[in-house]
Length: 249
Image 1: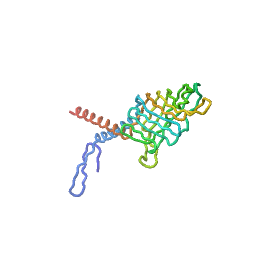
Image 2: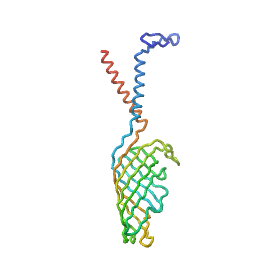
Image 3: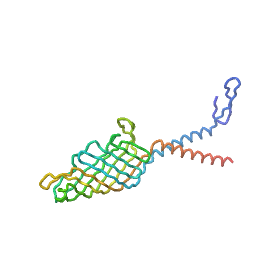
Image 4: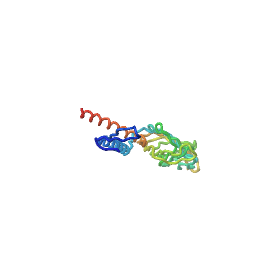
């Protein structure tokens, strides 16, 4: 039989194997306290929100001629994403008339099109609204003749990286969120112009180099949070034993 308390009872296993078993009330309380502490620390760590870090953002992007791609670096976050399709053009206008150009470059998903590195972690799923470029300027008639024009643009972006649960296979599967990046900045757009007659033109292609600032939020992995919680619990248990030992002496 197994007794709870300070009394000791004998339990015979076989005819000549007397074994003394003692489980004290204090040890049961200590075990329960340890489990409770581990659970509390783990839950506390899991409930901690991911921290957003301010980062510098730099990169390039292009759109038009049925293409769409972006490449950028922001702190520990870097990505390249090229969609398998895009818009045939990014805008149009008239020479010597102020115009506002606005176009968006969007991310894509899958091993065919995207790579994302977050520290030492990797995925091929990038989502979000992408990068919106806007600019107001006037294209002179002489630029239509050369077919190129350079203009300043402003930008804002939103990107989300997700774990790929079937990474390395011929398809992708959305998993937990790994990181998010919100940013804004300015850049220079190199525009390809196509003359459509009577001083009018279309912007068939745009290549943008940009810089800015943003907030990068990297989501901790659940396993890392659990290890942190058990580590805190172990530290608390060691401290408690020291206090009990000192009080007993």
